[in-house]
Amino acid sequence: MSPEFAAAAARAEPGMRFLKLHSDKTPELSTRLAIRGIPAMLLFEGGKEIARVSGAMSSADILNWW
Image (tube, rainbow, N blue to C red; front, side, top):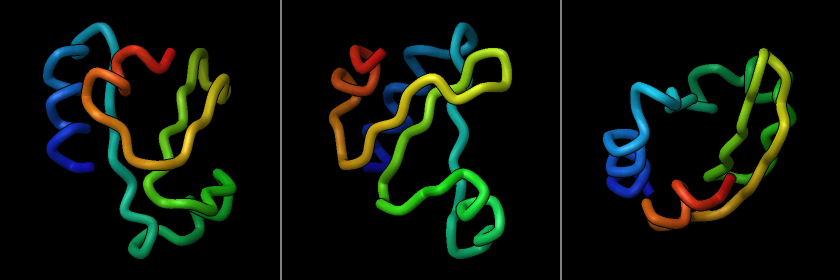
């Protein structure tokens, strides 16, 4: 999913910020965010989670997701 994620990020930034989390290297953050499936995408607005989806998606699907 990494190339699709990168393509979506390139098209959406700077209006939307995309971040990657390596769950093996930051298990405490993965636990805090309740990430159970990989890949997972979480959408935050104003510091609060407003949407979540698991599973691979194309860049077009990522951009149309929310």
